[in-house]
Image (cartoon, rainbow, N blue to C red; front, side, top):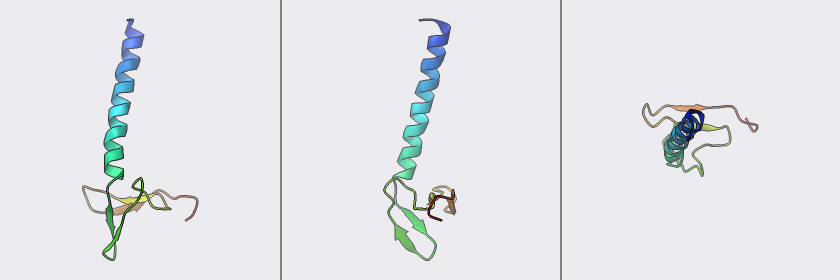
Length: 66
């Protein structure tokens, strides 16, 4: 295995691991303001928003329906 192939495999492994961690955070239910509990199938609402699990603050990435 050449150096380039090994590097590509390492990068792919890191990206897969990061995606798995991000997916586990996004798959959980989040609490929104007004004590409304919303379960998101994928962790994001229609605006691409979710609650940060560390800070508890809601934020969004503007989606097509906002």
